[in-house]
Image (cartoon, rainbow, N blue to C red):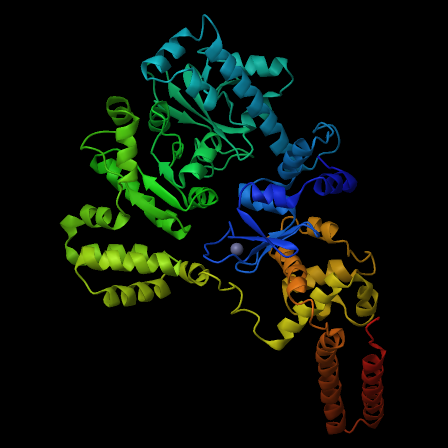
Length: 598
Ligand SMILES: [Zn+2]
């Protein structure tokens, strides 16, 4: 659906950006802005700024920036519309119901899927609460120690055994079967047409999205049928390996504890919950992915792995380590008595014992060495080095190098050199390697003067919108060599068909799906405060860009002149000489006409 720009702006203006961001990042006041450790990259000294006057944030370390919508999109993985809706609810601003008007395809599909998924969860929860029909399911849960508290916290439900109980119910309240199919709730019959429920006679565990709304389901069969576990397919709102079970209900506990416990399945998670260990998350039915690691890194910088104490469990646990390290998360590996799984262990030994295992968990290096013990020392060392190469934080790496040296019996220096070498080989490493404390990721790029001049000119237009008409007289978007700069210039300076767009938040909205351009905008504005006392040298910036254009023209005309002279074309020669004269004069006039308003 399409919301009017004024409504979006009203929602933005009603949201206190310091309050919103402060809910996720701890911020300290610093002059007119607030500073904190960037939630988007690993750092030890704060380069993440929130400027309430302008309603923006910007990180000078990794270059991310934008307004409240961009923050939620980036931090919580919401779509623009979901971010708008979330903040509208928060600010108590009523939005028109979706679906009525000419909704744009993708947004409309997401909206319809969200609503169907929410309605399905309500139905599943009613199924579990049903006095007669939910009895077997409640008894099953009770036998596993899952009581009313966990049922409420995790919004657990039950899918009735009929082939079409959900289908019929949702059809009654207005959902078309095609919508339900897209939401992964029903399956099309192979023969004879029609649809049937995907989840039948199953305990339903929902994955909740960043704002608590259900986005997918995992279902465990109540009886003996197959498959034992069944999950939602990919839908417009759910990409496999994106959500984490328990993250939404447990995120407060994760923040309080300062770490998350990663377990393999939702029964482990609920088992630990039952004994009071609540800072846990689980991937739902998939191998742990890089995206899940990044999602988790928004909430914590330390993860304790607690998987089944058998070969399969240990191998699965160690497979998560590369993604976690690459996301800037420190990893410890908890170990249970041989053969135990976290669910059984928690029930048998209780919360204190489980907590001791978690709190006493050693780093990942011994676990990796242990797991590769049959392969010999060289293989062990290589495996450790491979993983060390994924650690980008200099301090964390320093500590790990010390541990690795002791554990492997090799000199720290040797391991460090091998790690560096490994880092250079691996294709995804360089980008991460640059994101070390305080080092602007983009320092290496755009070192040349022309690139800097383009940025400076754009920054000038953003800070001094009054200058835009003047700049636009002399410079067009095509004068910008960098594609991102060109796009921004196009919006800022306008064109024959479009008015210049100089209002900050309208501009950010225009680039809602292009974070790097939003970062350019907020960088320019964020920097202005730090550079307040410096004089803005508009003239220089404009001149440098114009100079390039004039030089190119000059060269071209000179070349044509040379060719005309070669073929002794007197007439062309005279015309081109005149051209050059005009160009020269034009450049002088341009230089004189550029003046900064007082
Ligand atoms: Zn950052």
